Image (cartoon, rainbow, N blue to C red; front, side, top):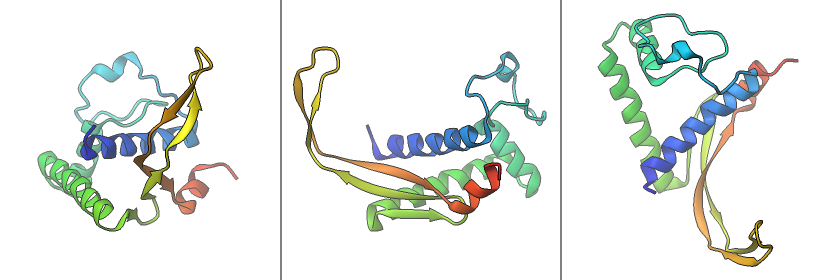
Length: 138
């Protein structure tokens, strides 16, 4: 998998973790298949890309394509910084960190046989304390 695909998975995982902290369900409602078109978000459903771009376009009075370009540039910047320094921070939200995992011995759960798990590099998302505190009930 490419670095871009891994980073997208980390961002999506970050959104899922936020939904989990808020107690939202991951399942989409049947009405979620309709085009966003500026409609308010249904209760208990996560915000999709179209809704996110529409929100930022309306909030900052720009076109939706410009909002999408902003997020694309943010993703490219995070990729560059992760490759360069090993971490990328969105202040007050999340810190993305490159982590090197060592090779290890694991077990095949179906057969119980020992297997060699190779070393790999992963990207971890650490949610900021400020965001956790604001989302979790006191």
